[in-house]
Length: 478
Ligand SMILES: [Zn+2]
Image (cartoon, rainbow, N blue to C red; front, side):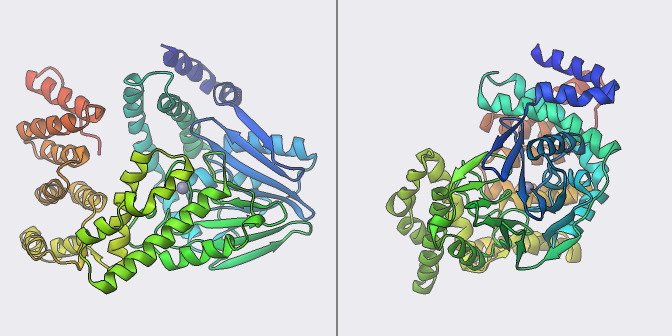
């Protein structure tokens, strides 16, 4: 019920755009923390946080990231100007290209904007897809609202979802009506040092495979602070987001930063407040132990089963519990980390990429033959990844190659029979193919594995209504 009131207020205030911010402040508290005389942290939201950093230096104010919405960033700017009693913004540093780090750039457009050399092109590409992004977020809103209904309203997840639901319309409205693509004016490839008189900022490119591939880390020795954008999350010890990650570079960067731990007191990321440096030194130790251990295992010619046994969480990595994170979560993340690191150590290639190539060159039949061959030989040359296969399936589905998409989703089920998402994807492909009985069967299988899958519930209702002939079938959400 409370949600309805909020949306009603929003509806009225959205009509009076000057009030939208007032509303935003009321429902999404914009707050700030003075870390030191020179460092100000401005935050919006508590559970889905937009966090930007302002540093007052002898050579102007430097911003680290600018948030997800020009409307919100205008409010951040007012706070910064008031707190510092000055408005000479000289630099903006974008930790990576993502919209929730760069969409406020236009509010500081008089400053030089610094980012990694990969960022401008990615920002341009995102801008080109802006309308698709808005449409996908609008359809996701319905799912988030349904998810919220199923949660205990006082739970952290419910509060996080509520903040997302409140902040999305502001952000999407900005993107549609108020956004000006504001690209970096200075880029670098490896490292860059910014001499700001009383303050130095050392910018270091992190490397491929962790978050977006254009992520940078910023170290401020005078304030003993490290800013890490989205590279580290306090609540997780996951290592890689893809099997193509640049572990040697990560280790080099981390060793360099942590050489003398006294140089850093706190680490700020963009969404979670701050964390003690101990957290990232543990992450570095874990990465080094995995990387060196698995490279030695490769030389010994161990199988993955032997690697899993020798490098099990309990035998080697229980020290991660010093982080205070839940042991079961750490065990789960370790399984995935071990798999990715082993793929990387063996320099395996993506089976999904290989099959996509075969499908486009010789068709699905040849691709399936190759898949069977790889599986029967248990070739170590290729790795399978659920997300990559799901992505391939959706690319085929969006390209109206539905029979091919169905086969790809079937492979994913064969590889990952415990994942609810793979059944949901296959059900969607069957539905698009007009095979509603099969769609029902697979949505039900997905729901059995994950009763929280509200998309499956919605789709089952749509299919049921269509059978009764009362409501036309709506186009499914992709
Ligand atoms: Zn990001």
